[in-house]
Each structure stands twice: as C-alpha cells, then as structure tokens.
Image (cartoon, rainbow, N blue to C red; front, side, top):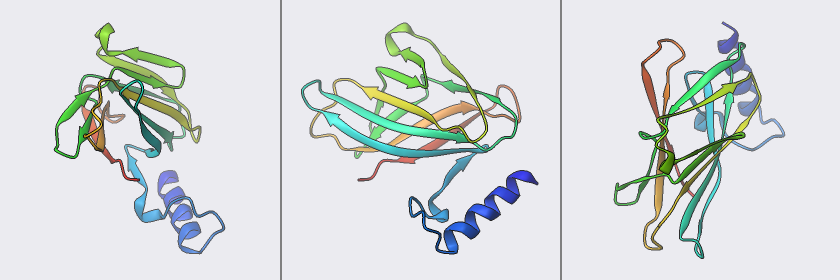
Length: 154
C-alpha cells in the first residue's frame, strides 16, 4: 500500500506540472521497487573505454540487499552484440571482471540514490551503445533473478 501511495503521489506531481522536469512519470523504470536511471555515458577515446553512469533508488521502506549477477550484466551495442564489463562500481563496492567474482552485494536504503558505474574496455569507436542489461536477485524470492534492460540514448 505504501509503495502504491508513492507511485500515485509521483504521478500526480509529474502530471500536475510540478516545477521539477527531470523525467516524466511514464518513463520511470522501476523493477522490484528499485528505480534505475541513466546519468550519462560516454566513450573515453584515449583509453578506448565505454563509461556508463547510472543510479538506483530503492522505494522499499526496509533496507534490502541488492545482489547483482555480474557475469549476466552486459552492455549491448547497436548490432545487439553483448560486451562484458571490465569494472562495475556500486557506491564504494568495486568488482573487476578479472577477479571472476559472480556477485556484487550492496545494501540499499530507502530513497538514497546509489551511483553505479560500468566500464567496458576495448570499446570500438564504430560501436554505439544501445542498452545495458542488469541482472539482480528478486527481493520476493531468494535465487530468482530479474533482468532490467536500460536503454542508452543521448
């Protein structure tokens, strides 16, 4: 009920022409009571790296563990080719692909945005990033994973 009330308030605020114009209510990407959004992304040409900066906000009233499956998390280019990350950082937790760590664990707290940075090495100039796919464990059932595809548009 509390989550429903929040969605109604957010929807009324955006539809009512509030003074904040960051995002329309229709474009909110919320999965399992977590809102995901793209801050920015760019190609660091000297390093040949794609850098994607996201943030996540939990709407759950209780702190919850966010368990990301790192090897299922991938970036897709315009040709639908998948690319593995070289590093993923969520808050102060850093996971490197070379370390072969399956999961990234982070404690999400209500209404506290957390930065997520994904870096892909050896990114070709000709490739255009189309979306990032994040895979994380459901809060409803342990061992069940959910996938969220976040479009990358400029």
